[in-house]
Length: 149
Ligand code: RB5
Image (cartoon, protein in one colour):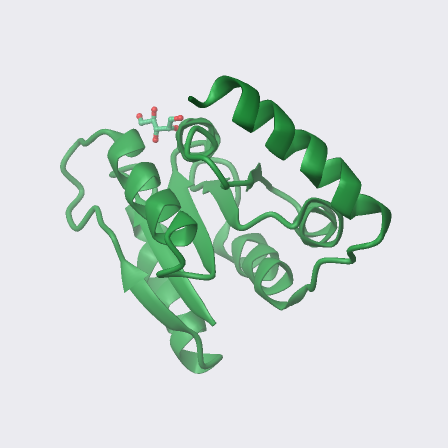
């Protein structure tokens, strides 16, 4: 599985821990930045990751900013992206099972590295349940098609 990564200056301290996890667990990854702690605009990195997932260059995306909120709002503007803003393992697993989320956004100012890694582990290793959730996701896509012209 290929994973696209995006951070702003308020999320970049999680980057080495995430990359170490991905390497140790055999995931390919692309780091879309940021690359320094200089203040930057989170939307730019969320867009790059969301586009990589939309275009099939990555299977999943992981975004980290201060809260995860700005990143998730920005990523969800890209058609085909279902970005879940998650700070607990239950939600990370549930959003894969029920929402087929393809991107996750977290806040470095909100959680520690232990919970963050468990969230990523659940997000990358849980399969979509399908069934009744397929029609529900199709409704989301209908909304997207109605407004994203
Ligand atoms: C940066 O200060 C902060 O606003 C950003 O990382 C994020 O939390 C926005 O939602």
